[in-house]
Image (cartoon, rainbow over all chains, first blue to last red):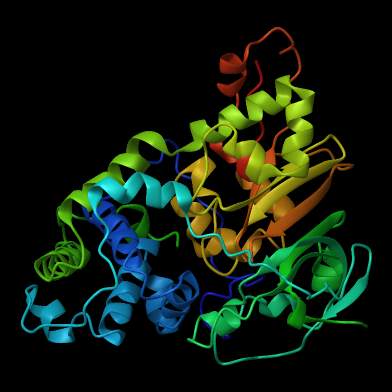
Length: 220
Length: 207
């Protein structure tokens, strides 16, 4: 979606402000927000793609004002309500008011190290599906503006680049984010000359790459 | 964001009053624990991992080993996920790793313009600047300017390659090994590897 998350190349946000000796968290609520997001995600009801889509679906003015953990919390609330685990009234009151959906599983403390160290790999067996492109191939990215989730940034649409590597056969977020299944595809590292993206405003001597699923790409 | 609200959360309250996120997150946690959807002990266990076990020292050990062992560096180049797992670093937001090597001719910089993708298994949780609009907006269009804001001025002849983490591949930058470090053991080398140098927003420390 052409949402507030698609920030590449936008102007007006000012300089980067690295913080010397930045603490891991800036407030205790951020610690709780991080842990709650992971623990609730471990129920297994939504994918990371649906979760990202919930974050970028926040109203642009909210998204751009919020710290990242606030974005996480607002999206987590939306996911929990969407899937029937909690109600808006419960979130407003801070207590349970009615039974909700039953979780597939609940993360136990003892399982945490194993769950984190396993992660959630998204590579899938390709079977007979051969990659359509090979390293060195010239490709053009699709021109598209889907209202749903996509991982093709606006700045990289309709651009010509070179396939640098075949990265694997990966779950397709555009499908998985909205419950249409994992629909895995070949994934490629595609590199562009900066001038091919930014034209006369490119910095000299720069190149830029994205990871692009096969359906984002066509032969020029 | 660069305004004070984000740089200095005012949990304790001042002229703007208390940060509403304090009550909001407390309410959410109360509902989730009361409904049995999350367990309090599991929250503590998650925090314990990310506050004591998973952070940029993991990545620094990977880099130090790559600097001191050419066979390991080669493995890291070919199959970073496996080479990093050999040091015990696996899992969440590090399931599919790729290492990119800086040289005098080429400097690599990693960003996620669309969200905050970051190699947690080797670098821990991302810093605020990495997740914030200024970096996400500008790393792709003005990488040399952004590097200068980190105090990194590259020679004009050094090309820059920006990696936008648009999928689940997570990138680890292998910085150039500082000169004069031939005699150092892995632990001493790892001490020269900063978090920012493994994102490409910094260089390894000079001896």
